[in-house]
Length: 220
Ligand code: OGA
Ligand code: MN
Image 1 (tube, rainbow, N blue to C red):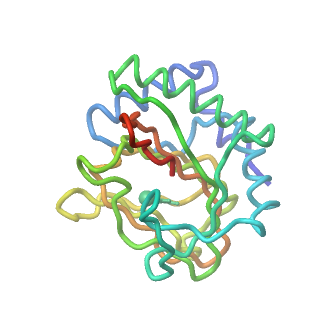
Image 2 (image 1 turned 90 degrees about the vertical axis):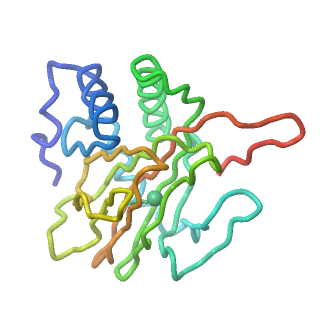
Protein backbone atom coordinates (compact mmCIF):
# COMPACT_ATOMS: atom_id res chain seq x y z
CA UNK A 1 0.00 0.00 0.00
CA UNK A 2 1.05 3.55 -0.67
CA UNK A 3 1.96 5.59 2.36
CA UNK A 4 0.40 9.01 2.45
CA UNK A 5 3.53 10.48 4.06
CA UNK A 6 5.31 10.16 0.72
CA UNK A 7 3.28 13.04 -0.57
CA UNK A 8 3.01 15.26 2.49
CA UNK A 9 6.17 17.31 2.35
CA UNK A 10 4.85 20.19 0.29
CA UNK A 11 1.39 20.35 1.80
CA UNK A 12 0.63 23.93 2.67
CA UNK A 13 3.41 25.25 0.43
CA UNK A 14 1.43 24.34 -2.65
CA UNK A 15 2.44 23.65 -6.19
CA UNK A 16 4.35 26.88 -6.69
CA UNK A 17 6.76 26.00 -3.89
CA UNK A 18 7.41 22.61 -5.50
CA UNK A 19 7.92 24.21 -8.92
CA UNK A 20 10.25 26.80 -7.34
CA UNK A 21 12.42 23.99 -5.90
CA UNK A 22 12.67 22.46 -9.35
CA UNK A 23 13.57 25.77 -11.02
CA UNK A 24 16.23 26.60 -8.42
CA UNK A 25 17.85 23.17 -8.71
CA UNK A 26 17.88 23.24 -12.51
CA UNK A 27 19.35 26.72 -12.47
CA UNK A 28 22.16 25.88 -10.03
CA UNK A 29 22.91 22.20 -10.78
CA UNK A 30 21.24 21.35 -14.08
CA UNK A 31 19.35 18.50 -12.43
CA UNK A 32 17.16 17.68 -9.47
CA UNK A 33 15.83 14.61 -7.70
CA UNK A 34 12.62 15.05 -5.72
CA UNK A 35 11.60 12.02 -3.65
CA UNK A 36 8.55 13.86 -2.29
CA UNK A 37 6.22 16.54 -3.53
CA UNK A 38 4.40 15.06 -6.52
CA UNK A 39 0.63 15.28 -5.97
CA UNK A 40 -0.87 11.97 -4.92
CA UNK A 41 -3.92 12.49 -7.15
CA UNK A 42 -1.60 12.66 -10.16
CA UNK A 43 0.78 9.80 -9.27
CA UNK A 44 -1.54 7.06 -7.99
CA UNK A 45 -3.86 6.82 -11.03
CA UNK A 46 -0.78 6.72 -13.29
CA UNK A 47 0.73 3.88 -11.24
CA UNK A 48 -2.52 1.95 -11.48
CA UNK A 49 -2.77 2.51 -15.24
CA UNK A 50 0.85 1.47 -15.86
CA UNK A 51 0.39 -1.87 -14.12
CA UNK A 52 -2.92 -2.57 -15.84
CA UNK A 53 -1.86 -1.52 -19.35
CA UNK A 54 1.74 -2.78 -19.45
CA UNK A 55 0.86 -5.96 -21.35
CA UNK A 56 0.02 -3.79 -24.37
CA UNK A 57 3.21 -1.67 -24.31
CA UNK A 58 5.48 -2.00 -27.35
CA UNK A 59 9.24 -2.24 -27.88
CA UNK A 60 10.90 1.14 -27.50
CA UNK A 61 13.04 2.64 -30.27
CA UNK A 62 16.45 4.26 -30.18
CA UNK A 63 16.72 7.59 -32.03
CA UNK A 64 13.98 9.79 -33.41
CA UNK A 65 11.80 10.16 -36.45
CA UNK A 66 12.86 8.24 -39.56
CA UNK A 67 16.21 7.15 -38.13
CA UNK A 68 14.66 5.43 -35.10
CA UNK A 69 15.54 1.77 -34.76
CA UNK A 70 14.91 -0.98 -32.25
CA UNK A 71 18.04 -2.21 -30.45
CA UNK A 72 17.66 -4.67 -27.60
CA UNK A 73 21.35 -4.30 -26.68
CA UNK A 74 20.79 -0.63 -25.86
CA UNK A 75 17.37 -0.68 -24.25
CA UNK A 76 14.88 -3.35 -23.30
CA UNK A 77 11.92 -1.38 -22.00
CA UNK A 78 8.45 -1.42 -23.51
CA UNK A 79 6.56 1.83 -23.80
CA UNK A 80 3.23 3.55 -24.51
CA UNK A 81 3.04 7.23 -25.44
CA UNK A 82 0.74 9.42 -23.36
CA UNK A 83 -1.88 11.15 -25.45
CA UNK A 84 -4.58 12.04 -22.94
CA UNK A 85 -6.77 8.99 -23.49
CA UNK A 86 -7.48 8.47 -19.77
CA UNK A 87 -8.27 10.74 -16.83
CA UNK A 88 -4.90 9.78 -15.31
CA UNK A 89 -3.08 10.87 -18.47
CA UNK A 90 -5.03 14.14 -18.66
CA UNK A 91 -4.14 15.00 -15.05
CA UNK A 92 -0.48 14.29 -15.77
CA UNK A 93 -0.56 16.42 -18.94
CA UNK A 94 -2.25 19.28 -17.09
CA UNK A 95 0.40 19.10 -14.35
CA UNK A 96 3.34 19.06 -16.79
CA UNK A 97 1.75 21.95 -18.69
CA UNK A 98 1.65 24.04 -15.50
CA UNK A 99 5.28 23.13 -14.83
CA UNK A 100 6.22 24.11 -18.41
CA UNK A 101 4.64 27.53 -18.00
CA UNK A 102 6.28 28.02 -14.61
CA UNK A 103 9.75 27.07 -15.89
CA UNK A 104 9.40 29.34 -18.91
CA UNK A 105 8.55 32.25 -16.62
CA UNK A 106 11.30 31.57 -14.14
CA UNK A 107 14.11 30.35 -16.38
CA UNK A 108 13.20 31.79 -19.81
CA UNK A 109 13.72 28.40 -21.41
CA UNK A 110 11.22 28.90 -24.21
CA UNK A 111 9.87 25.37 -23.75
CA UNK A 112 7.26 24.82 -26.44
CA UNK A 113 5.78 21.40 -25.78
CA UNK A 114 6.05 18.24 -23.72
CA UNK A 115 5.95 14.59 -24.77
CA UNK A 116 6.02 11.56 -22.48
CA UNK A 117 5.56 7.81 -22.39
CA UNK A 118 5.00 5.06 -19.87
CA UNK A 119 7.90 2.62 -19.66
CA UNK A 120 7.89 -0.92 -18.33
CA UNK A 121 11.14 -2.75 -17.56
CA UNK A 122 10.73 -6.43 -16.78
CA UNK A 123 13.17 -8.43 -14.68
CA UNK A 124 16.47 -8.41 -16.61
CA UNK A 125 15.74 -5.21 -18.55
CA UNK A 126 18.02 -2.14 -18.66
CA UNK A 127 18.80 0.98 -20.68
CA UNK A 128 22.50 1.47 -21.41
CA UNK A 129 24.21 4.79 -20.75
CA UNK A 130 22.93 7.44 -23.13
CA UNK A 131 22.13 11.11 -23.61
CA UNK A 132 18.51 12.05 -24.32
CA UNK A 133 19.72 14.77 -26.70
CA UNK A 134 22.89 15.76 -28.52
CA UNK A 135 24.06 19.35 -28.65
CA UNK A 136 22.59 21.16 -31.61
CA UNK A 137 20.93 18.05 -33.00
CA UNK A 138 17.78 17.85 -30.97
CA UNK A 139 15.06 19.99 -29.51
CA UNK A 140 14.81 18.08 -26.27
CA UNK A 141 15.80 20.51 -23.54
CA UNK A 142 14.67 19.08 -20.23
CA UNK A 143 14.19 15.39 -19.42
CA UNK A 144 11.80 14.20 -16.72
CA UNK A 145 11.30 10.79 -15.15
CA UNK A 146 8.50 9.97 -12.72
CA UNK A 147 8.62 6.63 -10.91
CA UNK A 148 5.57 4.48 -10.20
CA UNK A 149 6.82 1.60 -8.02
CA UNK A 150 5.69 0.90 -4.46
CA UNK A 151 8.13 -0.69 -2.04
CA UNK A 152 11.31 -0.71 -4.14
CA UNK A 153 14.31 -2.12 -2.24
CA UNK A 154 18.05 -2.11 -2.96
CA UNK A 155 17.82 -5.78 -4.04
CA UNK A 156 15.46 -4.77 -6.84
CA UNK A 157 18.27 -2.98 -8.76
CA UNK A 158 16.93 -0.83 -11.59
CA UNK A 159 18.33 2.44 -10.28
CA UNK A 160 18.76 5.41 -12.58
CA UNK A 161 22.47 6.31 -12.48
CA UNK A 162 23.23 9.88 -13.53
CA UNK A 163 26.70 10.96 -14.70
CA UNK A 164 28.34 14.33 -15.34
CA UNK A 165 29.79 15.28 -18.72
CA UNK A 166 33.13 13.64 -17.71
CA UNK A 167 31.29 10.41 -16.97
CA UNK A 168 31.73 10.63 -13.22
CA UNK A 169 28.79 9.13 -11.40
CA UNK A 170 26.73 11.80 -9.66
CA UNK A 171 24.03 9.71 -8.03
CA UNK A 172 21.85 6.63 -8.21
CA UNK A 173 18.10 7.19 -7.96
CA UNK A 174 15.79 4.56 -6.48
CA UNK A 175 12.70 4.34 -8.74
CA UNK A 176 10.21 4.67 -5.90
CA UNK A 177 6.61 5.76 -6.31
CA UNK A 178 6.34 9.53 -6.58
CA UNK A 179 10.05 10.28 -7.07
CA UNK A 180 10.59 12.83 -9.82
CA UNK A 181 13.90 13.42 -11.63
CA UNK A 182 14.51 16.36 -13.97
CA UNK A 183 17.72 17.15 -15.85
CA UNK A 184 19.05 19.09 -18.83
CA UNK A 185 18.81 16.61 -21.71
CA UNK A 186 22.13 17.55 -23.36
CA UNK A 187 24.22 17.66 -20.19
CA UNK A 188 23.80 14.37 -18.32
CA UNK A 189 24.52 10.86 -19.58
CA UNK A 190 22.43 8.37 -17.63
CA UNK A 191 21.70 4.68 -17.44
CA UNK A 192 18.97 2.38 -16.12
CA UNK A 193 20.70 -0.43 -14.23
CA UNK A 194 19.46 -4.00 -14.55
CA UNK A 195 16.02 -4.29 -12.98
CA UNK A 196 15.28 -7.37 -10.88
CA UNK A 197 11.50 -6.88 -10.88
CA UNK A 198 8.83 -5.09 -12.89
CA UNK A 199 9.69 -1.39 -13.01
CA UNK A 200 7.25 1.30 -14.14
CA UNK A 201 8.03 4.92 -14.96
CA UNK A 202 7.06 7.84 -17.15
CA UNK A 203 9.89 9.39 -19.18
CA UNK A 204 9.20 12.76 -20.75
CA UNK A 205 10.82 15.70 -22.50
CA UNK A 206 10.16 19.42 -22.69
CA UNK A 207 11.01 20.52 -26.21
CA UNK A 208 11.67 23.54 -28.32
CA UNK A 209 9.78 23.94 -31.57
CA UNK A 210 12.26 23.47 -34.40
CA UNK A 211 9.99 22.85 -37.31
CA UNK A 212 11.10 25.01 -40.21
CA UNK A 213 9.62 25.55 -43.64
CA UNK A 214 9.57 22.32 -45.62
CA UNK A 215 10.79 20.14 -42.75
CA UNK A 216 8.49 19.24 -39.89
CA UNK A 217 10.45 18.31 -36.78
CA UNK A 218 9.33 14.76 -35.97
CA UNK A 219 7.50 14.25 -32.71
CA UNK A 220 9.12 11.37 -30.86
C1 OGA B 1 14.76 7.20 -20.92
C2 OGA B 1 15.40 7.05 -19.59
C3 OGA B 1 15.21 6.59 -17.24
C4 OGA B 1 14.44 5.81 -16.23
O1 OGA B 1 13.67 6.66 -21.12
O2 OGA B 1 15.36 7.89 -21.78
O3 OGA B 1 16.54 7.41 -19.48
O4 OGA B 1 14.88 5.81 -15.07
N1 OGA B 1 14.69 6.56 -18.54
O5 OGA B 1 13.42 5.19 -16.55
MN1 MN C 1 17.13 8.74 -21.07
